[in-house]
Length: 525
Figure (cartoon, one colour):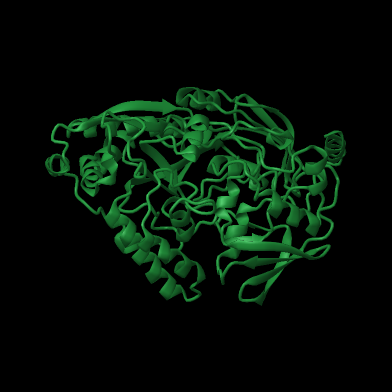
């Protein structure tokens, strides 16, 4: 850290920043904090987004969600299952150590350790091998055209730093086993960690030795998580903040009317949906004993038909959402747009009939697990759904909690009826979302299939999709897989939520549909 801060001081004295732009401190907020500084310990998308400003992979997305070179300057195919990556020379970690092939191989080994969640998104990779100091070969288990997208899940960590600080393995948030990497960092990225107070404030400093040419003009970034919607907005309007990436929809007009701030809004790749425990013989949180009602397709259909997504759009989302017919955003690569229609219509009477046929004429009680600071109006959506389900006899015990606790619930499958969202990230492809949320949960797949839905016919589609090089044939396979999933109703899709950011006039944020704030593209007046 001392070396990092000395380098920063020198950079400031030299006028560090994008050409012609005066260097600035940038202050911003979101509704929740990053869950960890260890990039392998969680698959929480906000945490991943935050950490992408500190750690880098071989490739990265730009603000158009397009792959571009990062720590690898080029790549080529050696065989149908082996890709060769040429690493950039003269890349240094924040402590001044050079980045080499040894660090790439180590990162692959570290991401396979027990505490790692990221390994669940790298299931198509068989091995990472050093060829020479600046060349690595990555072998896949089968021909895999999306390897570049999958490599977004492998930020490169320093072998020497990790070993010196007893952080050879990923922090295990589920078992509450932390190590040095959970609160300290040593990446190669555009910003380095200056200080961190969990859930209070995290300060980053611009990396003066970054290999890329800065397009930002920031010297320091101060991130302050604020859970309260009202407090976030008032902090922005008071001038205490330059930007927020979680603007309550009811505040959009108020912010725009000031003339000093502007709102940037667009659809997100993320779909919000409800999942159900379809694995246990008896639900963890229900008054139904000796059996699991969610194993019955009629019950799942009943829940589907009890929820009015148009009413949620109108009354909760203030008209700014895009009702979904599948868990994939139609904007994701390969998504079958023709299937983005509701499988079943909203019909409470049909819902009651299905429940009666399944043996629950009076309904039943079950707990609903929802975050209260993760998605746009997450708690309000759940409250609306609770009311709708109550009208057909399903009584809900709410279990609402901050994203950090709710995230552990998902990863430990401590759920019965639960909300979640997924954007197919970081790969931004339909296959990634299906592999992560619909595939049978194993050590290498279904990392967010917390309800443990399983269908061998669906699972059989995934390797076909993964290895198909012809786009037309691949898209047809994706449509077939989504049809299988939709007909089984393992999830209740709700909508794609809006991305709503706001900033002081003159601040350029470069909003992207993956809802990731890339600090290396931010400029401030």
